[in-house]
Image (cartoon, rainbow, N blue to C red; front, side, top):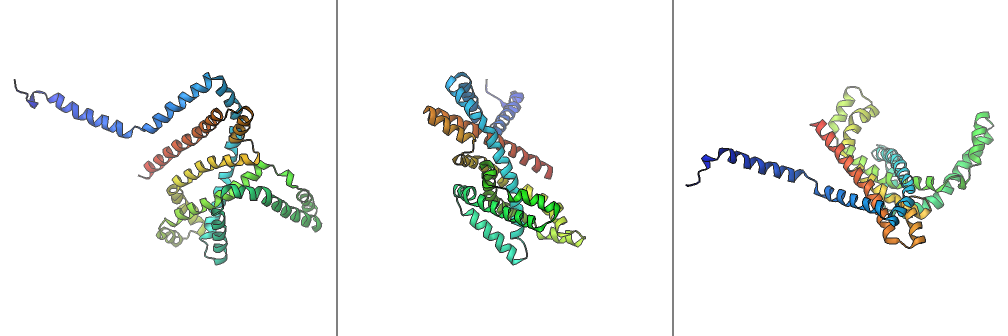
Length: 295
């Protein structure tokens, strides 16, 4: 008997839907994430079952807190400083704009490790010297309240600022230059018509910036801001050269004492990957949420 498509209407309707559903699932499934999860779970099993890896993990996990602290504090300060520098670069005053541009170009052109050395070993003594100068001036002023503060500032020593605080300052300065360009690009991407309309209805410059320009600009620059935060987490490993006990420093010390370099740096990489991939997924979810709310 000859095959007639009309004899199988249900099958004709079912197969195309199945193929479209499978194609949609195939298109939406993040296979890279599935592969990363499988590898992550497999390595976690190795850490749990293998005594050597378990000892290494216990030795390194104490550095996670330092890595997170340095990254979060440095990035928060860099965001604030970067926004101020971006606004300074866009200032109508030539001197302010040129000074901000000079800051950005010099800092961006300097390797992060070199900047760390400069601020930790040269910049910090200079900052302390400036604080001491202000403290001595307050003491000499003779004002009762100012004298007490001045004595504390005048007595500040270089050793009173630990290396963790110094590297936070260095990372803040380094990343503020990059973030200022991100903010500047986002602000300049907003049409001037919105600014003119806001000023026309009586809003001040700062009100326009706060309520009209910045909310839109931050949404547009969220991806590069997230990428810079991920870079901050990875660059925080540079602080290990200053003796700050982060994950990388703990790994370096353990590997040097046991000669298990391969296993140790496998765990170091594993810990960093967990943080960066988790942050990447969180940022993508936030981007999708904001995109839906805009639509």
